[in-house]
Image (tube, rainbow, N blue to C red; front, side, top):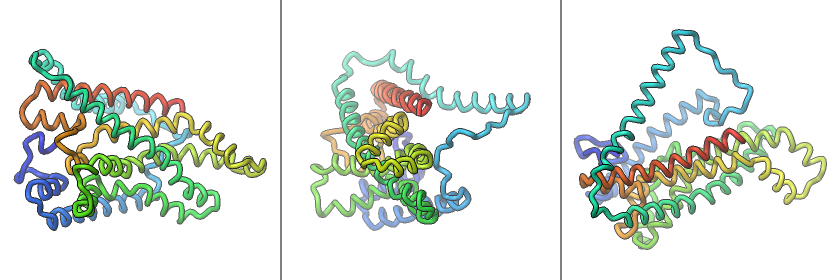
Length: 316
């Protein structure tokens, strides 16, 4: 985003500085140093928030919570804040619409469709295993909860949210330095993009499934133990119980993987591209009509995923 808006040495962020050190200067020591700086800052903030929030501040709320009703002036204040936020989010999207009226007739749709297809394939390859792994990752946490080992459960919760302390660029730099002398990145790039996005989306899928699975254990674990159900029967019950939460976790992982830019920036190749990276390439070369069309296409796909996510959350 910073690069597309004209960022450079005088206007940069840690992630952009890491990218420039690798792609522009090929300065591995500088990139690793900056990655450690970002990891330290993010890890410290995460530890503080986790300490203040008791280690479960990311868990979704489950019913029974009371929402305070604001008074007259409070309601007006809240409405004004929501209106400003809506304008802030909608205005950049509305600006895209007039640009579409000036799209040249020579515009090639094939690169857009190919990039969309690549994005969907990579997102599916990431979202399916992320959803399954989220269920597996939660298994030891659930056992610790049932056994009353709360410290162990909190430690496992922290480990399952690793992506919040090791952002995309930090993980990408580590894998880039590790894979560079061992693999041909032009061949293994798509695999590494999928694996890194899997690692980054896994914590969010875990957060979607955790409350529902803990609720299942609290209500039905003693009954399952008393009935001596086989593991296949219990697994069938759990997956039926998860229902919308499972689909919501899949939709969220798909949505996050669809919008990846940081990982693809390091491991992508000019012969194949994703829709977010194609938008960056169009915008950085001032091809605004093509960038607007690609942005609206990505917005439509992501909007559909958000609609599915919210619908499944409501029915979970």
